[in-house]
Length: 250
Image (tube, rainbow, N blue to C red; front, side):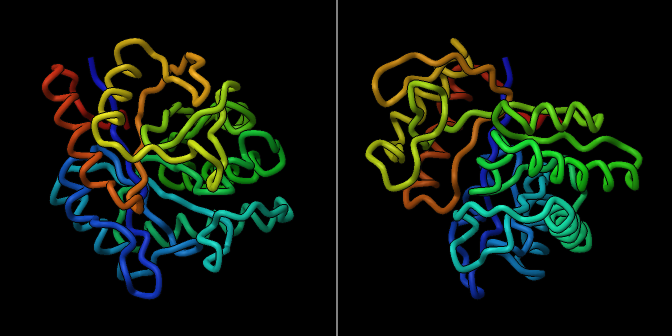
């Protein structure tokens, strides 16, 4: 058995890291690196690329709305052409920092928008397809099922489904909005058990106790959560002990 373990990293704000990237890179297999719009800058992108090479971690681009003031967590409705250009610029910025890009995962509010908004989903995948054509290989898109999966297929891009270890799920299979009860899961032991259940049984328990089927090839942790390092280490230890290989699929 095998699974990918990804984390949102490189999210420096005003020169200050929001996560212990060094510790996180040591236990994950894929890093979703901020590309400058919600967080990150040229220096943090170069640092992330260097760490990824040192720890053997795959680098993915983590583009967002151009919204540093709200860390990319406020939904917007940009014109598709503008969103496509913005995502393309973010991918180019990370590539310019020396990244060997292996996949793309939208961030924050954009991540959720492309689940139910085909216009935004197609704008994002168009930017990914443009870069894929220049690279000569199709970059996978990482996310939750919905419009983004359909847009990726239309653009000839692989789609890889993920599940969240540190976020609560509603009975309908969506994430509990931040700020609502049960939105965050921060107990390392609970998160480790969730990881094992997702890999072995393909399911996660919603906040109301409903069992939700999730066929995830990648498991996500947020690097800016206060207990992120403890959770990541607990998850990695649990997976290793269970004989489940942690490896990037790209």
